Length: 264
Ligand code: CO8
Image (cartoon, rainbow, N blue to C red; front, side):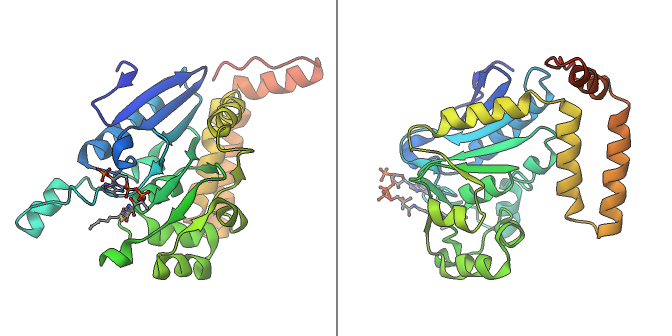
């Protein structure tokens, strides 16, 4: 699939070995409609399968923000619950759980509802100082339906998660950083995407199998008891011992040179 627009709501951009997925409905603060759901899944598949991409970043287009959640104005007119169920895209945010490559959310401005849920399914969240986070669903008579009730407690602990879930209150970037919802803040609003590009390139320069396995061990390990998690880690560790990239890293260290990884 060519770069640029897949359809109208998502763009793919490639910069060196980093593939950017740009949520592109800026007039609606990138609110999520069925096309965007479908195209995010397609873009993830395209970039995960591309050997020239070592890391993926998701960001929002426009000045206003990353994503203001589900498109409230385009709510379904489906006449029945089965019809509504048929027109939703089940598990589209969970597509992020199946991506082998590292995925970073680069968050500026509003990051609300389903937008926050997308970012929480990414591996790393980095925000600009002007970012604003919240899960306002209960105020709409709903609960988060894209993993928010499950991923937020895992990221920030049950107490802080329930505070955000029950109040629907917004928090700013500094607070999100303080509670561990995001792991880094950019130096300024303007430098977010450049800083994320640098970080993503650094991650993308590492042996691909090591990045995929370390992600698998950490993420899948959360679903396991400690004994099973340690066994998973050991198995993946041993698999990596046989790779060319592991041998090249050790040789380069001994020879005091930069390693050249081949992805094998
Ligand atoms: N859906 C559709 N359009 C949106 C959304 C949205 N979620 N958010 C913003 N927009 C549109 C506005 O309608 C406006 O369009 P227009 O210029 O045509 O009027 C444009 O984006 C700019 O927004 P505002 O004028 O409102 O800008 P403000 O700076 O005044 O406010 C806010 C920005 C605070 C982000 C405000 O727009 C807002 O509160 N948005 C809604 C946030 C929200 O509640 N998101 C939904 C979360 S719930 C969810 O994601 C799970 C599913 C919920 C289903 C909803 C069922 C009702």
